[in-house]
Image (spheres, rainbow, N blue to C red):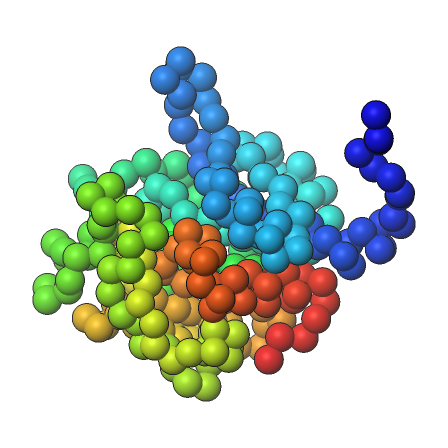
Length: 258
């Protein structure tokens, strides 16, 4: 039988070819009663398909473990999942909040702080965009339809498939996001009921839905600090969505992304 590993790369060669991308995880209870730390396979495939090596980061390891892990990562993907605890953005408890995990919030906010301070490339998706905004001093609508009059619906799953293109998004022409995607408008999937209320200081809004809901954020002056409200990992049949992950893993390799 042929061995799986036919050659051994140096650590530097391995990191250059396959940057290590930490994927944050959700913590849920299985039907058998034990806890699961998980991320959708779509994230794993999207990162691996773009040349990265995805590594799942469990919740609850403790500060010392995360301090040891972070310098070994080449990038962080802040994944989707449950709602961020409203206390982190100065709001009252919301009865419509779902799957709140304050320990996950705390862990991810620490990862974000490290990524911003140390120039570690990061990509936020859905909850990840909201996490970036909250972590840098912004706030959220706890529920779009009840708190933002005139907004359209943004949570179409499970009535429609995760890859259903629900609404158009307009992207700022001079943004990094537009440069990466090669487009200033596109239709996206939509799986969220929360949204950015007040953008964080120093964060640039780069995309909006037709009703004005924030769909893209960027951190100017950072090697790769970018977040989108939709789920590009479910749209990997689209060249533009693959390009987003390729740009992210490229930045994690040390490439300069315009």
